[in-house]
Image (cartoon, rainbow, N blue to C red; front, side):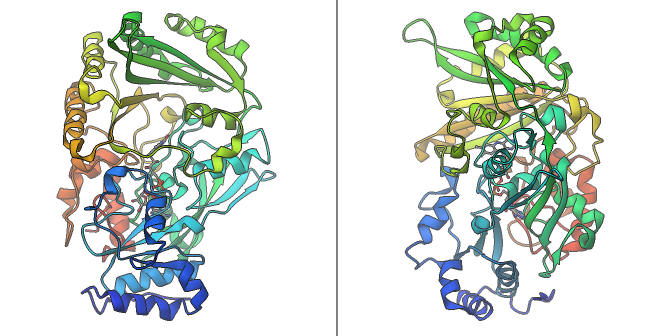
Length: 515
Ligand code: FDA
């Protein structure tokens, strides 16, 4: 076993020494060619770009890694930690590459990427209702692995099927089963981690503090999580999904206003979400704003219709808005993909890649009708042509879990979480679109949670504040963003980080700093 010294002898980066160090440790030359991609390697760009899901960080001026390491064994991960530590390279860990700010594959200092694309085994044990899933697998690969063995078990994680398990579970993981079962991390029961000293730890050997921290306290912070053991949850063989679109002329504002009072109180088996975006109006050449009310009931359509008619008649849900399907097909439905064949879940590149900036809010008090009107009207602006806000109802199981149970604190009392997304295609216009989303975020300040204004770590937003690129970051400086993501759990995360990685080897712009 490789144990890595805590006393890096040479902090000045030397690329040659780094490569030499790795090649000594990965001595088999046929393996080396499949594990180390230097900038001279003809496959370097395709390996780098394969998991970039934000084109904003894939331009000619974006800083590139000196090398990409795609480990095939745990010892390759240990060697990469050892060599980057001893030769002054920052390590960026990448699983699915969906980090919204690109921090898993971009850094402002000399760096290498540890890309877990070959760590993607999914082992489902239906008898014990558990699965071991490696970090480089996508949620889609996990969902597919479960569904190919049983129709009555599922896993409560994110909607998009191409996100990596490694990053997703490092920050929480909310999806359509969230009101029924909580977050993905609420169902993690063991993990395999390589720490800054190269030790391979499981739940028992890492201890409950570190095990608490890795379940949502941020990626690239406490170590490299190679795999997670998760508890699966029951799902019925048939679920019902629906979509009802209402635009401004069809009372979208009033219906959304009403939704805020109802959605978080509905039975846990029913999840609803509202997607707000600009669409063509029925008047030729005009635009309007649409609120698309979507949802899923863990049950049949005959149960769903009377439930909505009783609780939320304003929506006007009819049978033709609804479709019955399996839970795994519902993932594709919410992802905007055809629900057959389901093996598209194994396609890591099924979704288009554009330039994106995202921000999040948690809302605890219903917005006024005038407030909603102003929010909707912002989508009529030119910069909002490819913008969307995804508003997800909370309540249910999320209300029952204590704020300090895990690092993710946004639980009881949250009515809904909003993810604001703006996209563009021409990089020269990035500033215009980013300004728009910043204005939208400023507008929402009066309606969002306060002191702190809470934000979801999985949709990283470097506007909230960052660590110093080089050197020490004080607790006070990091608290500016840390309290927004983690509330009072931030302090405990800092204490754990100080204990397990005092030299701050695992770091990025928003990783927890040691004291
Ligand atoms: P990536 O590989 O970029 O890693 C993200 C962060 O985790 C980086 O800091 C990285 O270094 C670190 N990291 C990655 N693997 C690690 C490992 N094995 N060990 C330690 N650190 C590691 N969220 C949600 O809750 N619900 C949802 O429905 C969605 N939907 C969604 C759709 C789309 C299109 C995007 C772009 C994002 C989402 N998300 C989401 C947010 C998503 O959960 C978040 O971006 C995750 O961090 C993505 O994980 P990846 O492994 O893909 O990212």
